[in-house]
Length: 94
Image (cartoon, rainbow, N blue to C red; front, side):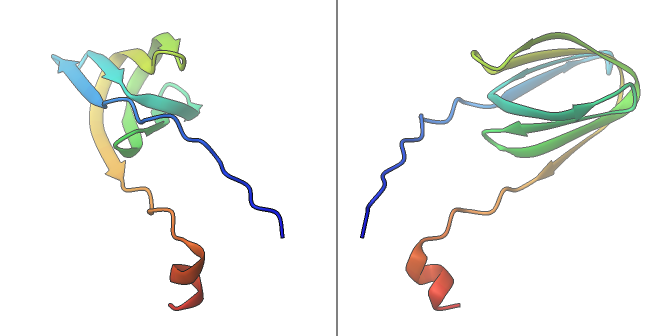
């Protein structure tokens, strides 16, 4: 039986700064799921984040550094926790 070890890089710290509901700066971004002028879905080291608003524009995006800058009117920020990775025995003995 083959054993495969996967390496995950350490999670980057996640933070966000919202300035007057018009400019949002994020760090710790791992992936961008989708974005348009009304909603942006991101995967961060702190969980899934959905940003809703109007006129949202991605000013800067760097997945290498984990930084994203958004402009536009921000109406809501919703986090969804990502489920923990479960091992073989945890899945077996539910």
